[in-house]
Length: 484
Image (cartoon, rainbow, N blue to C red; front, side, top):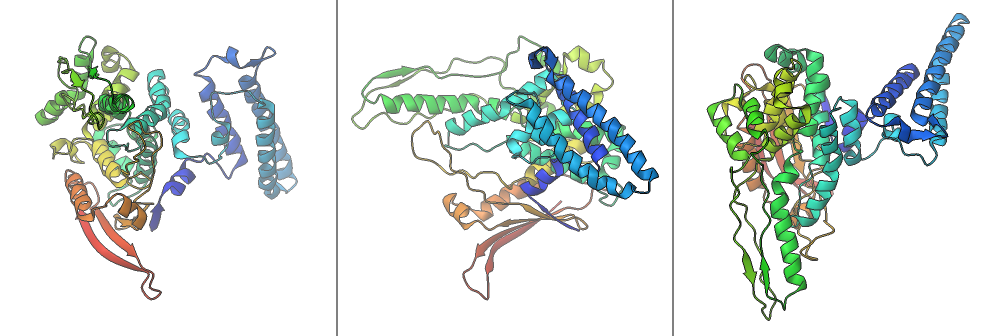
């Protein structure tokens, strides 16, 4: 069976619709209940009455009434018409709930929980709540991520920032789909459950979603110092070319005064020596050396451009893992909670995913969650903007987006993935080098060792030119097959 994997496919999978009205209304109640758990209901009161609680009560009454009606129709031999009645009532309930809310703002997206499609970026928070991300610290990070990315889009050192909000949702949804498939050794979620000795439903229903949705939440912090220094300093230099300016660059690192060391020790459990070394390197140096001040003297042609290089490279995978662990609780709480043992596997998978060198920890048989995350992370290239410089000001407020890839084609039976690069405009604007890109992807995929427990995987990359010739509509310029 073949699948076209793109954003429409992703949105269809996360749309919370059901062909059964009873399932739909039960799901709606659950979504509202989950959302209300995290807010102060007093804030939602209208004339002393909580709108959220009122909606739940109304839905409960409607559910009971519909069950009675369904039974009566069934007794009369008219049970077949209930599905059509249910659809009509469903639309009515949607309308009535929307009408009753008026201008009130609730802590959940009514359109999303009723199955209305929306864009991926704004759906991230809704999906995170639905999939059990209920820790306050983690939800705050998920909610803040789009704003952080908007800032980095406007301040990136290369006038470009690669999205991680929509990317995280795509990774999570695609991984959930693969976990539900039998790739030759039984359903993948069951294979992994047996390997890590955890409940299959817990892995697919919670652990994977945490892994996919949160694997890049540390990315903005890893790039923040470079973005701030480059954009703001150069904006000042451009605005004041006739002044002599003295600047002390901003530096950002992780403090050792808290419990960083304890969280690192949790990450390091049962990891290879090299992985442990990379974890330590990924959090930066223990002490921040003051950055050397820079002086810019006025020149006739204006100031020269300021280039900033960080003292150390913060690894966004390690930052994401540490953010996740901190969001769970203290190191003591994590180590003494049996349920959190699965969460430690999530944190370790996240911490490992950005390391480009070959590690034994990347093997499916050693770290199946990390293997799956890396595989999907590398496959998820569609819908991501390419690095097109916008030469307006140093402080870029608008970024032109062109996508090199609109989607993937998955031949599930053979587990073959097809990436076709057809957007000539995107390739031209980005000076796309297929050979360079292909080599980079080959290096990234080759870190993975599938062993005997994971299906052989082929990634087929094609560089395609669209032709104006009626007889030959397209031409394959280059191609490469990567085998795992």
